Image 1 (cartoon, rainbow, N blue to C red):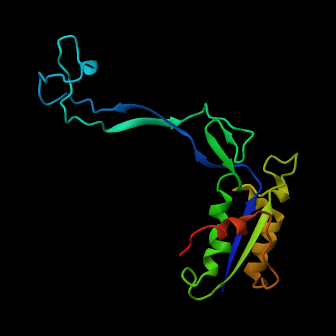
Image 2: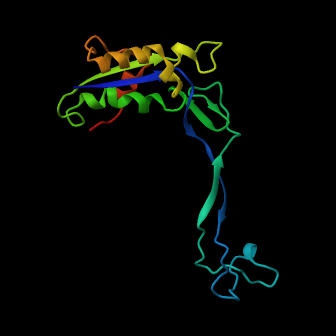
Image 3: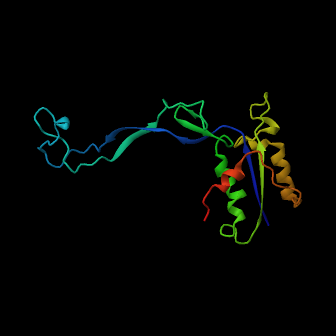
Amino acid sequence: MKIFCLHGHGKETERSYWYARGEYEYDDILADAMQAVCLNTTECDIRGVTPRSPLDLPTSRQNWIDVLVTRENEIPKVKNGVKIGEGDGTVASLSLGAMCVEGWQRKRWNPAGIKTVTYEMAHRPEAMDIRGGATTADHIDILGSSALNEILLKVAAGDSDDIEDHFVSDIRKYAQKIQWD
């Protein structure tokens, strides 16, 4: 038995987000006491009465991606509140490859010692093909990649002994920095 990790690399991928916070939100239910005394004058009406009791806590808070945060000259780059990293356009490289190159090499995560092969494919889409053509490594379009299909046919035919690790990213360096145990 072997584990094959086949994935793309080289397309900008969302990695994390910058969030902004807004006001707290409350239920539309009025306070228990109809004439609750207002302790905070900023939340009182003109009669000095608040519609919320002191224990009426917010149920949520408005949050959104802060599109004003842009740092295109930094690494990693941030565009419109989205931190951009390496990956296949949908999944970050760390999620795609860390278990393959490091986690499954450890007895704790792979007690049987099953051989693991990692094969990364560089994203090099063909200019005139809307889906990227035979050299794409985009998350979904990689299914049309000739390299991926060749490997899949070899595995299905039982002729996978000559498939070896192939890296186009620094995933081994990244995965070594993870505290696995």
